Amino acid sequence: MAGMNHREDEGCRRYGATLSAAMLCLLAAGCASPGPPHPPSLALPAASHKMSAERIADAVQISLSVPERTTDHLIIHDKRLGLRLCREDHPGAACQTITGAAIPEFLYPGSIITLTDPLPPALATGEPRLIAYRVELKNSRGRSAGLSAPAFTLAGAAPAPVQHFQVRGSRLGVVLSWQPQPGDDTARILITRNLADPQARHKAAAHHQHDQETFITEDQSRTATTGTMLDNSALEDVAYSYVARRERTLTVAGHTLTVLGADSPVQPYTLHDIYPPLAPTNLTAAGFDNGTVDLVWEPVEDPALAGYNLYREDNGARRKLNTQPLTEPAFHDTTVPAGAASRWSVTAVDASGNESPATTTLLPRP
Image 1 (cartoon, helix red, strand yellow):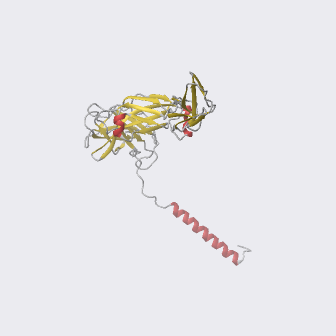
Image 2 (image 1 turned 135 degrees about the vertical axis):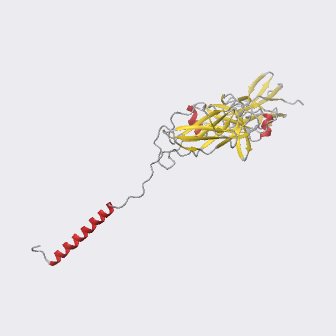
Image 3 (image 1 turned 45 degrees about the vertical axis):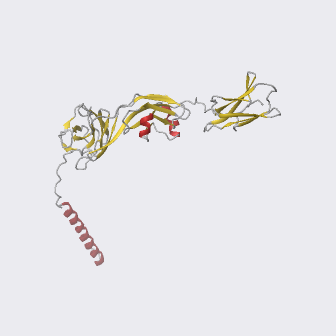
């Protein structure tokens, strides 16, 4: 070019060479051979790995998680998944389709569903034996990846229902009682307590209680004989409901499984602070020549105890000697009327004003 010196001409040639090389690289990249083609996805739902079977009375409850991905790890977008539930009545048996389990029409990926299989009489009676459940998940075209792994439970007779389950209040808490089952000390008693009033949740939460609590008998041989249990964590003025059932744990064919009996009738109960402390014992009186009397008694062990009330009866007229509950199990009476036929009685009283029965003593005569 006219007017361009040698150095400028050399720079233009280098820039043109660099630009040409870059364009050649882009063309080469655009013409690269594609990799091997991937086969189209069959969109088969993956097998459910979170599946369980629980025997409850004469039925089996099956819980499973609907998978969120296909067998080739793609997210499932199919909203019309189908499900087949089947049962193997003994190891190695064919898996028989169950039609009465109320399978939902729509299975949403990631959801958890619960199915119930009412057992035929042949499987709900007799000796304990192993049965298994499997599921087959199908896409909207009816295709599946096959049956899931088995979830085991037990056939055979379930534990007997809990008879005469009753609930009552006491000073120490809620007393739960039932009729023991003769000859059956292998089954534990499970007692479930539920909050009956949702409005009480804030009070229960403040005491680290949940909507549902389960109590288990620890000494099976003792409770099989006595049929009683104490719920000492029940809160006052909170409405609960209680239900009881038996649980037996067995090991069959290398599988340790539990079988639950039927629920007892639900027992509603609300504990109120209406129960007095125990009555004091061993009240004694010692008189002196100056007309005074010392009274002592055995103390009452009660965390809610406020103290004691002391009464004196003179010739049939009874009056309380203290204005505030006595905090010690002793009293020095300086107001005994001369020549009166006096006797004293003492009661225990709690912070709510509940008063125990009285213990009485007469002043010994010389």
